[in-house]
Image (cartoon, rainbow, N blue to C red; front, side, top):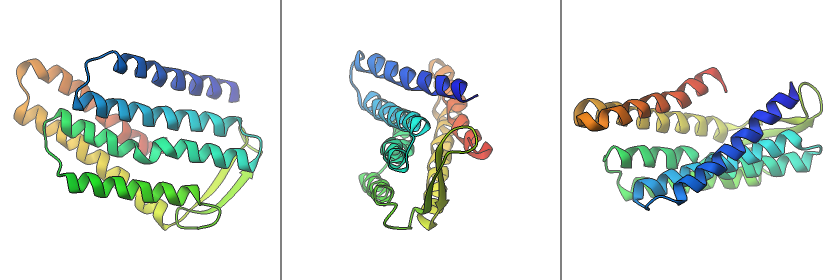
Length: 194
């Protein structure tokens, strides 16, 4: 089972890297830059998780988690900004700055996790179960961040639905329909605990 999970994670890493090449070949626009930033976040998160899966020590797994969150903590921000930009719904710059600052604060707490207990209340490397991994206790900032991520993802989902019904031109409805499905996947994943 471990080998299958490792192969799936390798495919995810290579798939997001392939996404870079596709996005880099297109004519740059604000929407494409935000999509590229989202893709970079997914790549870092996937690569970090792959590193965590193959870690054999506490320090190796801790560094992998830091790499994972280098993408993961900003992923929902860039994803939501991409969706709002694609739907032509303006987001005030101060909201973008607050969300970026908040994400950076969360990441700083992850980087210093063994010394502070705001994000992770405990960190332990275990070699049992399916593969060696970190068992992490959740601090108050972790729970607040989960709520922030869910709200951000739900707002992006609602933006696409709003655009589909209110602003969707006939030739754009197919793309918006695909975005509705793509926007529902992270929500379903969070609900299922994936």
